[in-house]
Length: 196
Image (cartoon, rainbow, N blue to C red):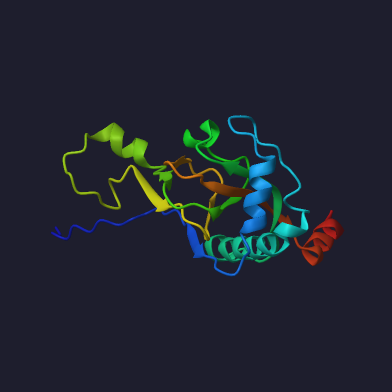
């Protein structure tokens, strides 16, 4: 018989965070203020084709691909941005827990001084169903959520299905949300088609 009690974390969720300092946020903020309607279904506007977003879009797609390669060890396909939209203020659609209908998502803040983005532990239902919290100390094993500050220049990349929400405060917080999906790279696609 052994007396070793080893607790192993068996699953994990990866989230990437960046601080972007070399993007001109002013035109992104102006665009968002002019085109975003709060508390309505988000229109997938022209963010992916609009020249004022070109540098940001490229940076985000490149970072999504770094994330995808690192987390999934996938080299036969690449993430392609599929849609993007802006959010202004404490929109009801983003302040309630939600997920995105995609594979990898990102949120960039061209303007934010307060508030957080909150991610919910996908395993918490397992923890909550077996016992009530008996400790005030939050650990990797018992946390219900994890939050990151919403600040100007912050970029967060995460799995699209990870439940999350915005915790807004009094400032005029503006975010640009992105979804991306894996696309087979051309040589792999041609090889696949030849096999069929």
